[in-house]
Amino acid sequence: MESADETPAPVVKKIIRTVTPGYGSHEDAGMNAVGWTLFLGLVIIMLPFLPLLVIVWAISKLLEKL
Image (cartoon, rainbow, N blue to C red):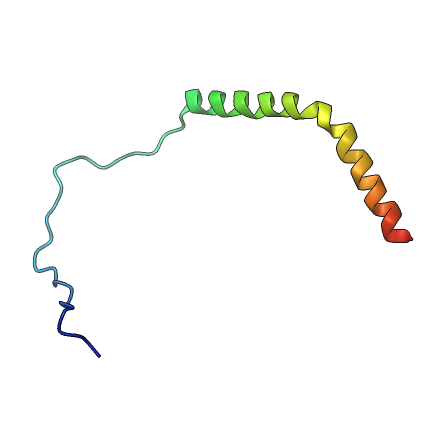
């Protein structure tokens, strides 16, 4: 039930065509290089934490068996 304060959504009466040309997708090698650089940087930063993760995983498996 509609209240008196709500107005119905307007109905589109005319479609307006755009004057801008369509966009043809292309690969952006520069952004790919940035993405890979960030990924490798994060891997290098997180590498020292790998032994800690292995220890926590091993302890959790050991406690699971007990």
